Amino acid sequence: MKTAASSSPPSPSAPPSKRQKTEEEEKSEESEAVKNGLKVFFDQNQLALQKSLEEREAALKLAERQLKEAKRAVPVLFAEPGDLFTFHTCYSDGEQFTIKYVGRNTTPPRKVEFCGTYEDNRFSPEIGWLIFHNAGGYTPINVCNGGIRDTIGAWPIAQYSHYDEKEMKRDTLCIPPEMCGDLKVWKGYGYDSDY
Image (cartoon, rainbow, N blue to C red; front, side):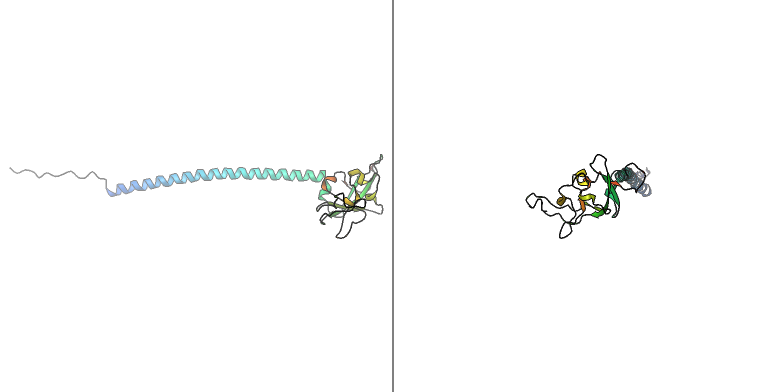
């Protein structure tokens, strides 16, 4: 009796084209995940950068406002050589005198003589202190009773005068910024009761 030859069913393995598509899909998914991760990363960095820029802008605006306030409150700290400033004496009538701004001290401090001796550890002005000269013929800087030195406490003269390379310059005043609060911008002669 003749029997039909048995044949095995075809292999269930997927065709190559289908297997290749799956690998491409996996790569695509991985690539998409990377893109999403990078997007989140860059978005977060952009937000942080934006916040940093806003904070810097706010700090800059605050600094500009404070600088304007400082110029109004203590204009002498922003003076140019030749600018005139006034001060009131300690007298009861508060007489007003004018002095001229010269610039900033550039001579390093050194020990100065006080009452004929160098033993008091007193030094000439520091670098950066403000220098003033008398503005006119009158010399209010060296008035010994009720003048500007009494008003702001700039004694002794040897410690609050300007020095060049060799010696103290007469009729000068050299003071630190914190002692300039009583100096006001000279606005010219007018009809104000202070003149």
